[in-house]
Length: 182
Image (cartoon, rainbow, N blue to C red):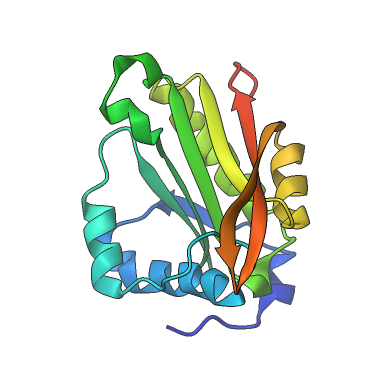
């Protein structure tokens, strides 16, 4: 899977946003792996195989969605929204979702993340989530600005929470309460 450098063309077109299907696994892995290999924007450190992504997509529950952004039939970004990890063990957290966003470097800064988030927020409303939470590496100023512009607020810091390329990094916890206008 090759991601092109055609980002200049996106300025005149809207990305197509849709739910991922198992056949998207190779392209989804390529986008996530491109961000992982940058070594600074995600706590994920091990690249994913096509087979792992195919199984992940096929195994999503009805309150989870992986949305992909396509430009000229090429997947260039994605966003996962799913119940908080503890929700499987308690009814007390059924209202909380988590979110994660990966955009290929050639397509950042072109509102793909915003369009993905608008889709995820509609999905969250439909699935009766009231809050979305995320962890962001403290040095990832681009992601912090992106989520801040979406209405997420910083609520705490986990010191030395991840170790990337031999360096400990703090992680910020952010949350957004969903209202009828999100």
